[in-house]
Length: 269
Ligand code: KIV
Image 1: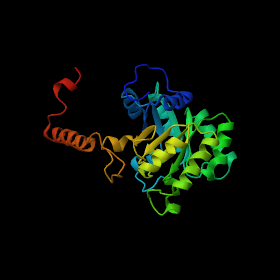
Image 2: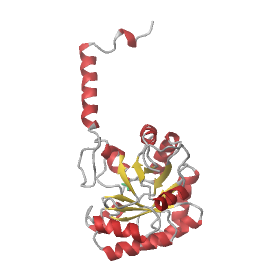
Image 3: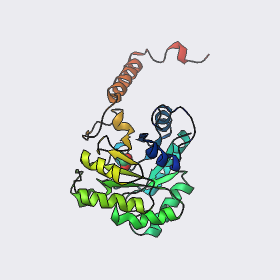
Image 4: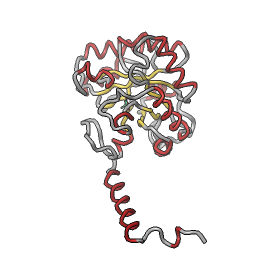
């Protein structure tokens, strides 16, 4: 199911689970708008995650905590318009599901019904199992998220690698048992990522969890080298677009100033 797919059938939730059974890796990109969704999908991404990381890379906050449900809904609508084939997963932002399972169902429903997402993601293991179960019981597919859960950054004391293998295993199993169809595993030691992947039948999607995970996720702006404020260890930059963007805009500014742009070919008769 991974990059350069041979068929253009839409990626589905059952297809996600089947990919693990077949040993096919899943490529997930966190994207927030129409153009990036189109590019990522054309390049072969199986799944587009409208992550609350947009709070950092789009909005410029130092954490994802200020992101609202309305903002995720807005960006989800943009991504949905750019996606023909990829599974679109909307991230549930901080305090949109932690209050009660009923709140989780109501807000997940909004992201599906009004924004057009195919599934939602929410953070937390054992502690969030009731919320996962309630959302799944409402017919909404849930992607879990354990390990470093950025919405708990203050509780965790920072964006730190999570090493309690026993708790991580209990979290993974609780989320699977509650009905999640896949599980993001963030910032755990490589051997723990491998153990979690073996322990559950649903696909694990790693970000800083090693190569044994059933898939990987990276943020669009990180993998393209567009976001350069800091680079987490788990990020690989496949391009240096920030330099290219800067030089293109420098060229534009200089052509505007010296009168080379617009040329005759850009004018109307
Ligand atoms: O918000 C996000 O983009 C995420 C992924 C990095 C997993 O949660």
